Amino acid sequence: GTVEVDVEGPTGAVEEMLEHLRTGPPAAQVEGIDVRREAPRGAEGFRVTG
Image (tube, rainbow, N blue to C red; front, side):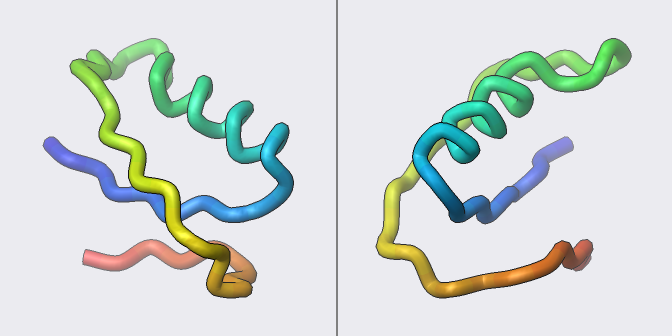
């Protein structure tokens, strides 16, 4: 399957999140990630869609 994640915050925190996404959970097989850098939108919270 495919997962889409929007992340914003301090650079170090975003880079740490990207590393977690590259690794994935133990049962996952992450084939790759695509990263697109954009200006922050001021998003807050956590939301699951789809």
